[in-house]
Amino acid sequence: HEWTSETFKVKADTGWVSGCLDLKADKTYVDEKDNEIKEKVEWYHEWTSETFKVKADTGWVSGCLDLKADKTYVDEKDNEIKEKVEWYHEWTSETFKVKADTGWVSGCLDLKADKTYVDENYAKKSEVNDVITSMKNEILQTLYPIGSIYTSMNSTNPATVLGFGTWKQIVDKFLYCARYSKQTGGSKKIKEANLPPHTHTGTTNFSGDHSHSLRDHPLYNSDYKAGNDVLSPSYNNAAKKIFRPTEPGGNHSHTFTTNPTGLGKDYMPPFVTIFAWYRMN
Image 1 (cartoon, helix red, strand yellow):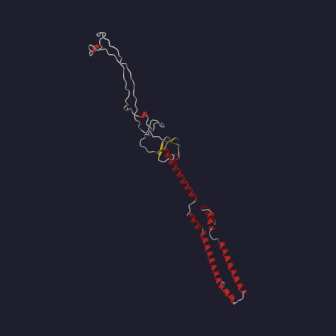
Image 2 (image 1 turned 30 degrees about the vertical axis):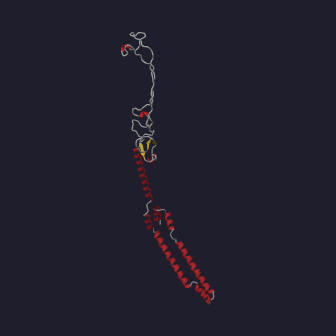
Image 3 (image 1 turned 45 degrees about the horizontal axis):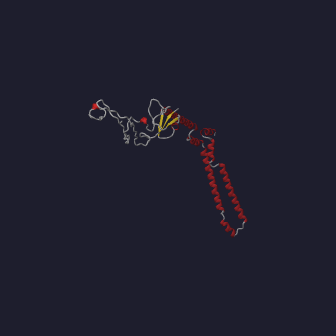
C-alpha cells in the first residue's frame, strides 16, 4: 500500500486516479442495491402469500389470480435477479481487483509522459525558439542597418514587417544616386531653364507703310546764272549737281507671336510605383 501510494504521488495525481475510480461501480453501492432488490422481492412474496390466505379460494379468485404473477414465476424471476446481482457484484469486484492492481496502474502511468520530462522539453523548445527568433532579428538588423532603403509592393510599414526600427516613407520621389543623401530636387514639369537653346520663326503681318518729304528750293552753282533753268545746260553732268538728303522719318519696329501649342502635362519617364522607406533609427 505504501509503495502504491508513493507511486501514485510520483507518476500521477492521486486525485485524478480517484476521480477515474469514482466513475466505476462502488462495491457498497452494489451491495445496497442487491439488498434493496432482495427486500422488494421478499416483501412482494410475503404480500402475495398473505393475499392468498385472506382471499377465498373461489373460481372468481382463481380467475383473478390467474391474471396475476404465478408464485413460481415470481420465485424464478427473484432467483434470476439474484443471480444477475451476484454476477454483477462478482464482476465489479473482479474489475476493482484488476483496476486497483498496482502493477496495472503503474503500467498505465508509465505510458503517460512524466510531468517533469514534459516541462523540461517544453522549456528546451522555448529556449530553441528564443534562439531562432534572436538569430532572425540579428540577420535582419544586419540586412537593414540605419539608413538603409526598404522597398515593397505592400504598403505595410517595415517596422511591422521586420519588428524593429523607425522608418520614414519616401513619397513622390525618384531615387537618385548622388554624393550626399536626403537632398531633393527636380520637377514634374519642364521649365524654360530645362529647354535647350533654340529659336522660333514666324511671319509678321504687313505694316509700316510711310512716305518722306523733299524740300522745294533752287540749287545754286557758280556755272549757273540768275534767271536760267536750274536743270540746264547739262542735267546729267554729275559735277554740275548738288544732292541733299531727305529728312529721316517713319522709324518703327514689329512684334509677333506664334500660335500656342502644348498641354502642360507632367513629364515623366515610363515608371511603376512602389512603396519605399528609409530607416531613421
